[in-house]
Length: 163
Length: 156
Image (cartoon, rainbow over the protein chains, first blue to last red):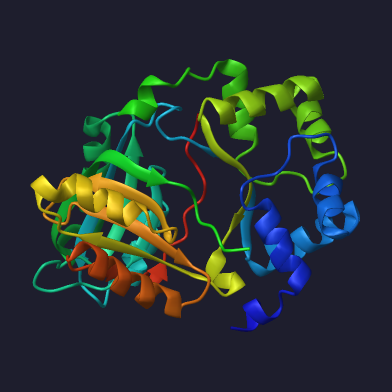
């Protein structure tokens, strides 16, 4: 993978040093650099490059959906005609209440769905309103759909790579 | 859900901080000062509130969000059909794998949905095989074939 090849050993150590979070000190990049033997300016330059190449999606806070009032989440799944899914998937992803939207393989006969759209809302009623909006957008391009509500978070540690 | 009961709701200033920090954290020597100025807060108060929100789990993390495929790693959504009477045992077995990043119980015959994250793409197949061996149940991987762009847009 060319993007992977572009990361050097210090970049990898920088990923390991920051994947649990940024320190809450006045000069966080300098603090990280001190642990890696590089300057704060070098940390900023490397993070900037990783943002440009997409290794970092964004730098910021991840709110707990429950804490900010989005207590319901439903994974809506759709069986969408293969020749229309990319056009329609892009429109579903653009809806304000959709937080993730992916095309994934069907697993027949257990699983006929190929479009996954995560819908967050303050309650199940609001989630189902969002799902109805997706259904209207997809129209007859969707043959069937389902909503899988989450009933418990069993584990949440975030994505980590090994040191 | 136990997590919910432990939470103290964010106040109006916390909410402004959450909304201001959802992306584009400044890459400058003193980024918190820059954000504090923008919000009309003291830098010390901003730092204290971020710490407190992390402590209370209003924020699950604060920092760079890595797309680990771009760093050579891989992650894949996977699901299992777990018999109800075995759910607790299987959840403990699956969660014990460090490659399992998130795991949710969902209402469906496929009732356990988790994300596997590994340092290499081959690591995914190895983890799937190891989880199947540990639990005695089939794992259904759902690798993403395409991501439809979504912006971070949950409003606190």
